[in-house]
Image (cartoon, rainbow, N blue to C red; front, top):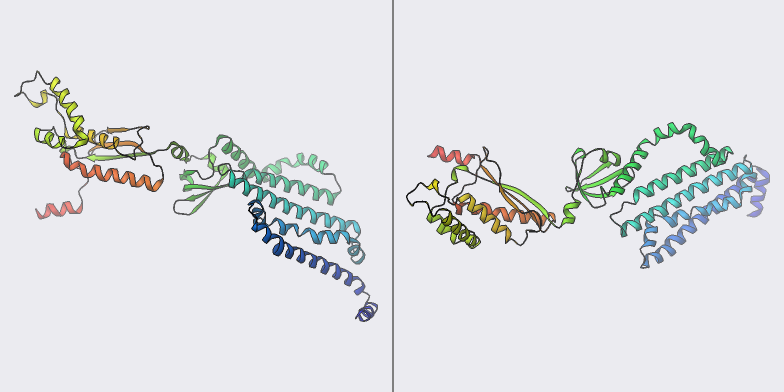
Length: 405
């Protein structure tokens, strides 16, 4: 076999150049595959068995696999004379190629380490968006690596290249305009805590309404309630208005602000029969006793046969409002330490609005909606007991009833 190869070399002199190169390439590739197999089949499974989560993050970001690319570079570096001897390249050119390849691989490895650090940090401190700062650091590393590569190719020191950047600063500002704006926006967001991870924000200009799932250098990702993802440029979020619901979530309460429109024609003074019926309602007993004492003192000089407008009287709308207050005061899901208000709004063509402005003590969305619905289910049904009617525009059923009559 060896004699055959030797005879071929003498017969075809070009093989004298090709065979060493093939052996070097084959050796490098074999060493690379062996290294990856050792990492994948021996080291990685052992790492996955450990209780530490950091090494799992390193595997996820392919750190060990990227390190394996250093093996063929080391082999080529040690046997670079084979390349220069068998190719039309001098040793300086070969060393330059190896140096540039080493820079690219180390840049790749550093990227993996920084990504792993970001993931590990984000798991522990979920509210602080570190990713944007790491991305800035990655950009600086890429710029620095580029300067070193240019320095190697041109023979000019990196410091000399940095000095010449001033001459092309206007071009760089134009190229990195969005990056600079995003960096400033990130600093504003972080220093003022305008947006944090997992905040619920509304940004109508971008159609975003949901949880913040990622804050990066250039973009902020919002997962909307319909599970779609809205990507907002970081600097444009600062330029436009948006609503952050974090204050509501931290307050321990969520606002209920809704009105019941009462038909104006159903509002009237309470007669004795109505008061007797209202006295049977436990939530109104103390209110009616207090009002009865107050009215008796106020009307003691009024003759019995005098006009009813000359004396003070209870109304069904006022009694209903007192019932709402008492009902909400005794409701287990209402936070009484926050704003508590039941009021009349100005009458309109839609009746007299009785607005309820209170806070629930559970701000979780589904629970909040259930609490709000239960309250208004009860109050809307209770209006009939106070001889009141809910205002609504005529429906098809109302019109059919008129036609039949």
